Length: 401
Image 1: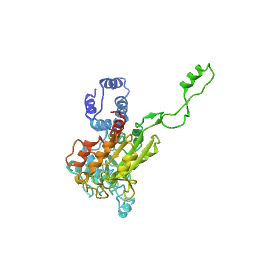
Image 2: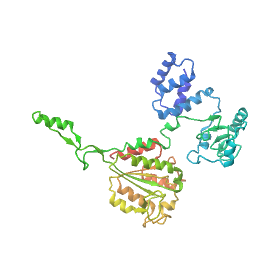
Image 3: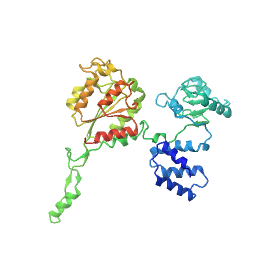
Image 4: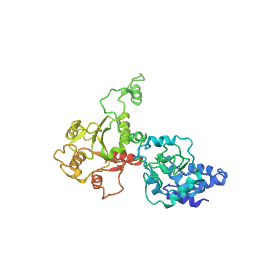
């Protein structure tokens, strides 16, 4: 039963075993779902989905297979990408006049008419639209889309704003659970916990009871209690965080703030140092994200004072002109120190044993239109700044190879 649903789940990337599928059939035979499709949804999800990171995939597969559950038109993945401006559009785009119009309680909305127009636009639209008053898009006055200035329309994708839409299409409640989602929450803390390398060799007092040692020494002392203390096991990891700031990284400033706070709140590391750069690392690193000339340290000083045991996380989009990477005068905001950005990066690679690069908008594979990114990928292991990417990067930093 529902064999087509099995293949739809596979299509959306869910790893469903035959045993799990037979268990679902058994649940149906036992009438655990009754005649309720809603109950079938919860039973199927409980049996087939192993992790909350796959809830969103399950919901998309379920929606595709059982469209009759909702009467909203199907949205293509391309349409949802056009409408996903959550990281680019400020939450408030309305003028005072539009705010006044939104608060007018006498506005009359013909729900059926708007829904009919929505179906017509969805059928005809073949490109992305931002602004305007006709197509499905963002920031406009049309009744369809998100982050616009209309009341009582159909919100398509995006995030809730003034909560005035009477219909929401493409709302995926479990989107934040996906392990390929760009990080913006406590998942930083969970991933950073993987950077653990416990040691008792640190120069700290012996403050913990050594139970095994106490038992051995007491027995050897004829049963007379002999207390043995030991040094507590502490995380011996030293972390160096280098973050790109300004320019094309401005849309990710909140994300970098989350990462910065997560690292410095965790108290798990033997030492943490954080510095900033703009586009590429050159002869100086900045102490603050404003990257002001003079408020910096020399990169050579960092090499001399932070030894090669530091694990290095570089965060940046690697979006720069080729000359910024290859020219000895490519740093237009400060000194180069006689070397190109590429040469400084290679020095960093030679000095530190473990370096990873996290990119919030990494292009898949080798992207010829992003020359600098492709070159940096050849120098350092680069990961997309998602839950899954950050986890892979932490594992890479901790392996002994």
